[in-house]
Image (cartoon, rainbow, N blue to C red):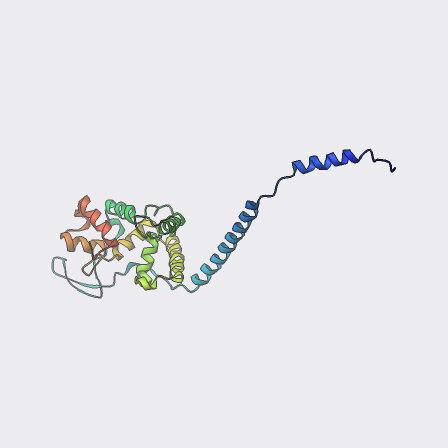
Length: 236
């Protein structure tokens, strides 16, 4: 009979102990690796597409942001008696805009206005989640106040023009505007830009049209109405 190897049992025990300590294979680990890989690929592809669209974005100028284009005619007392131009608008400088109105506009349109750089990732994520889950608040917009200003300045506001390409260009230009202008300047542009119904543009003109007062003479309720009106100017 062949001699038994005295170390056979020892080696077998070592293999058994090694197998016991070996980590079991989890199918979830492979699943997460695949998801992570797809996520990285999506980010890279999305960044490339964003850069491609941004490269063809239109130029945005201070004149386009301000749009104080109408010609005004004054009487002997300095009151506007007639306008010549495509838009009914009285431009108001940042220093003459009441702080209460600024706070109301930011609170309604873009609460993180002073924290983001023109585009707010948290707002975009929140909007996407609300849309996917069918929030009772309806479809949520991810545009910041700066993006809205860009859209009003250089893009069409028609629903049919809301394409991925245009949204990418809008975001890129919003980042540039936030870099080139201060937050008070951006608010000034926006407050003078928005449509307020009945052919009226800008909140200073709206104050005169609806209340026969300047912005400095309005009360809290009137500020709140003006700040919320751009969301649905015709309806309100």
